[in-house]
Length: 304
Length: 226
Image (cartoon, each protein chain N blue to C red):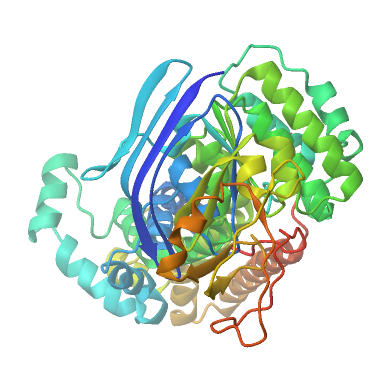
C-alpha cells in the first residue's frame, strides 16, 4: 500500500490560486484541511489532471511504478482518463437522465481491473443504496447522490482515490457507516486515499496524516491529531509573553496567527506542533478583527 | 396528380432524405466544435453557418451556380472526377441543400451538446473514459433529442426548398423537378387542381413535422437504465 505523490507549481485563475510544493507519502491516508477558498479542491483537481491552467510538476509512485503526470514546460503528459485517479466530487456529478444502476454500470464497464470480481452487492448494501438502483439520479437527495458517487468511483477501481468532502451531505448515522466502509475498502484494495474535509473529527478517523491549506498554500503538515488538534492527545503548553498582536483568526480551521515581541522568541520554542494553547486576550488587544472560534467546525460546506 | 407529379414527390423525399443523412455526420463535429471551442474563429464560423437563415435563397443559389458550373474551377474539377456537372443535376441539388439546411441541423445539435456540462465530462474522464468514449457514451445519448429535432427540421426544410433548387437545378423531370418546382409549374400553367393537391400535401406534411418537433421538445426524456 505504498506510494508517493509530488505536486509542485502554481495555478492562478480568476479567484482561485494555489502555489505549493508538497511531497506526500501515500502509505497512509492523507487528509486535506482548510477553510473555504483555501485551494483544497483545486489541489485535488490538479492531481487528477483536471486543472489545465496548472503550471508545474505532478509525479507519482503507485504500486512501485514511478510516473510523471505533468512537467512545467510541457504541461499535461498523461491525460485524465489514463491516470487511474478516481475522484468523488463534492457535488456527486452523477450522469443525469440515467438510473443509479446505469451510473454504476458506467464505472464497472470501464474499471481498471475488468474481469476482477467486485462485490457490488456488498458495496451497494454497505453504502445503503440498494433500494435506489432503479431510480433516476434526479430523484435522489444530496446524501444519496454522494453515496452513489462514492460507489461509482470505487467501482472504477482507481489506483489513487481522491475524496472531496465525500460525507458532507449525509447525516451522522450514514457518515459513520461510510467512514467505516471507506476504511475497510482501502484496506482490502490497498489504494492510496487523499480526502478533503472541513471536519477535523472526520479527518482524524479517515486520515492519519494531514495537510492544512490556507490561501492556496500549505500552512501545516503532519500527523492529523497533531495538526488539527481536536482531540485530547496533545499537551497543554504554557508560555508567557510580554505582548502579542493577533494578525488573523480563522474560525473554520482554528488557525490563529499571532505576532509576538522579538524578546519573547525563546518562549516559542517551548511550544510544539499539536500543543493546545490557552490565550488570554486583553480588551485592548490590537489587530483582532474576527471573533475567535478556534474549534474546527463541520457546519460549513465549501461552495466551489 | 400525374405520374410526373408522383415522380416529383419521390424525388423530393429522396433529396430530403439524402440531405438529412449526409448532413448529420457533417454537422455533428461542427456543432461540437462550436460548443467547445474558444477559438476567435468560432463566431465567424457561427455566422457563416447561420447565413442561410437570413440570406434570400436566390442569393445562395446564384453563388452556387457561379462557383459550381462546369466552366468554373470547382465545377470543372467535379466534372473531371465524376463526368457529371453539379449544376442542373441531382447531386448538385444535394450539395446545395446541405449548405442551405446546415443551420437547421447544427443549431439543435449545438443546443443539445451545450446541455452536457464540462463537469459531467470530467467525471466520465476520471472513471476512465477517453474523449472519444465520452462523446459516444455521454454526449451523444444526451443529444438524442437534438438529433431528432435536427433531422426533422432538415428534412422538412429541404422538402420546402424552392429558390436554391430553381437557381441550381432548374426544372428537369426525374432529376431536379422537386415538389415546390412542380407546384410552381402547375400554377404557371393554370392547373390549379394539381397545384392544390400538392400544396395541401406539403402544408399538412410541414405542419405534422413541426408538431412532432414541438411534441418531442416538450416530452420527458427517457431514463437510461443501464
